[in-house]
Length: 73
Image 1 (cartoon, rainbow, N blue to C red):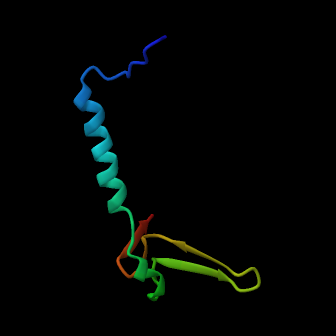
Image 2: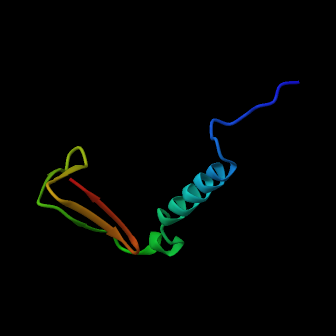
């Protein structure tokens, strides 16, 4: 039977990486109550096509809904 070895030299490295992934993944979650809150969108400019129901936001764009904040260029 073959033994499988990880590429990490020290056993604590695997645990540290796992803990880091868990820590950062929980920081990216929004509250469940946020889905009921209004959405605010701020941008430098916007172009809206009502016929196609498409809006394009350009410049510094910030979308906020409750505790969720998304920033984009």
